[in-house]
Image 1 (cartoon, helix red, strand yellow):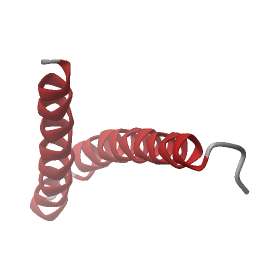
Image 2: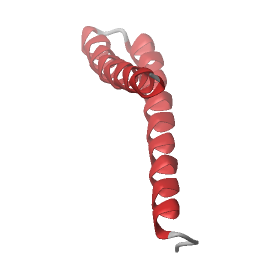
Image 3: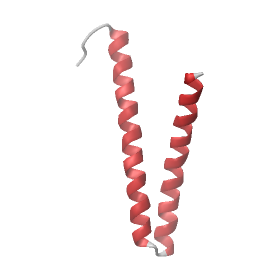
Length: 71
């Protein structure tokens, strides 16, 4: 049950990141530069957090499968 909930959260975050990127470009080309900068900033923060979480998750997986420290 928890795995399905995590998958839904991850998919909704990915969809939100893509939607923010598209919205940022649309606002920029329509001339709303300030709003585009704000939406783009939210996009970068969310994308960075998602990427960092994924990286940590992968490093933990490699560490557990290898049975010890890694370089």
